[in-house]
Length: 73
Image (cartoon, rainbow, N blue to C red; front, side, top):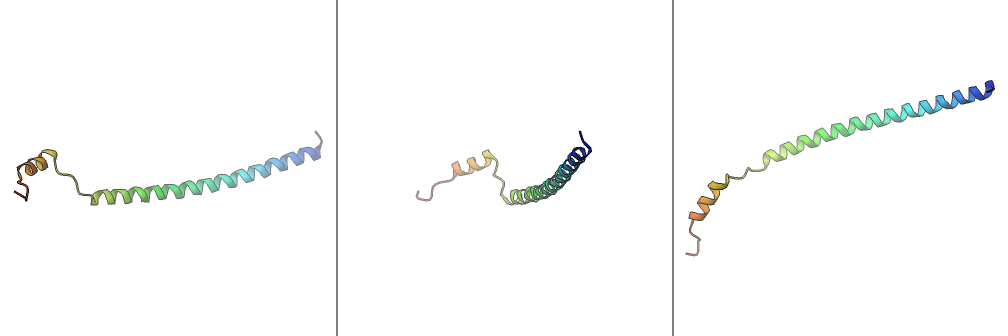
C-alpha cells in the first residue's frame, strides 16, 4: 500500500470516528433528556394516583346498600 493511500485511509477512519463520537454524544444527550421526562411523568402519575379516591372495602359497601330501602317505597 502506498503512503498516499495509507494516509487517505487513516483520514477516512479519523473522519468516521469523529462522526461516530458526535453521534454518540447526541444520542447520549437525548437519552438523558428522555430519562428526565420519564421521571417527571412518573412523578405526575404518583400525584394523580394520590388524588383518586380509594374504593371502600367490598363488604362495607355492599352491606349498607343491601340494607337501604329504595326511595320509591
